[in-house]
Image: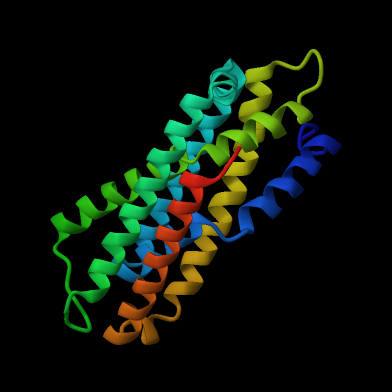
Length: 213
């Protein structure tokens, strides 16, 4: 409890909350998933996205992020791979939007299970392949780690706070999108929104691949 009342922890939570609610690739992916396969799959994708935060926190604590930040070649490579990945998801979304389908498609249980695993993997990869998250952790976490603090334990604590904030936000976002189910079940509306989210993912992918540090 004392940790949670730490002014530095509270400050980090505020910064993390602001960064989390800013529109970006995670929200676009969750929106696309709600449209294509429903909110439950979007919840699983949210867990995948936030799982990646643990990896970034550990990497930052043990110095892997430092290596990535000091190597322009590695940084550029991760940017390009991440950008291509987001653009590919965007193209798939647009392709799905252009494909004719009934207003209320049915999904077999086995297909649904594969969709859950795929959603988790997509969320995880999207987060891991985003060097902006690495930059965020590498530059922000040290500001909230005091001399003498156990670096790994402190990093994991901060990541846990970020994970909770991220899960709450993304799950809430997915839930309210799904509440529009009456509108989203209409094929033309769903296709239009899938096309828009696909275009957003492509734009984010291009921006990520071409952005500077």
